[in-house]
Amino acid sequence: MNNIGFCKEKLDLFYACLEKNKTKPGPLMPSLHDAQNIFGYIPLSIQKIISKELGESVAKINGVVTFYGNFSVEPTGDHQVSVCMGTACYVRGSKNIMETIEIELGIKDGETTKDGKVTLSATRCIGACGLAPVFSVDAQIHGNTNVSKVRDVIKELKEHTYETN
Image 1 (cartoon, rainbow, N blue to C red):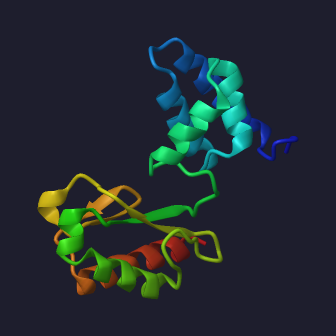
Image 2 (cartoon, one colour):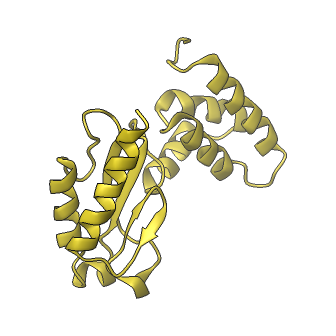
């Protein structure tokens, strides 16, 4: 570990990604995606590295990070569960979907399970309005959901998550 709290291997990988991204037009978004994938979140210390390497202000970078729902400034779980709360999903029952997941996981929107395995979040739109209501588990979209389907998917997630440990 170093003074910003990440292992050398992850930092080396990130710097290599930054170097590759610098050669592309619009390197900020790919760099943010790389940071999120490598570290699991994009804390201020990483935003400062991006700022220095890409010549962008920390304020601009932080604005982008906090605007987009797929970036996080806080550590997240190994698995991401997102519930669409956009208009189409909401009117078709996504509030019940969220409440069911909160009960099944024992956490609320924006929280991570105590063991750090699963993070739950509401999102404004997943882009699958025709399948409303929808939620995703690790970017796999589950559409036309109901409480029974949610319970089955979360049960499968728990079995998969805890059988590997």
